[in-house]
Image (cartoon, rainbow, N blue to C red):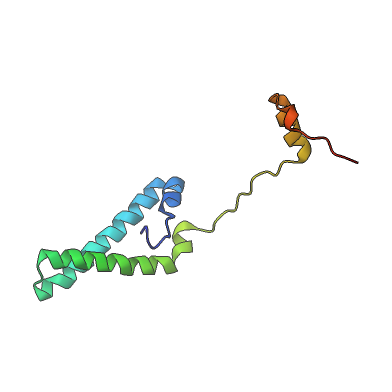
Length: 106
């Protein structure tokens, strides 16, 4: 999930914790079940099951990457408030840093 969502799992967790935990649990169970189902017919040892888990994690990450907007949603772009020069100068004077404010030459 972390690979597929491009590090946005924390954003998803912050928005809706229950949804994020449910998605992580569901994908985890899918990965483990797929590796166990794949290993059972071939009689693979537990070490190979762990390798299959890693491989399926990569594949599920690729699948999630294609459906990322469905899981995370559109990014809301929050731009910081741009302060004018007058506001900045007022803040500097308020903090007794008026010496840093230079007067404009006309």
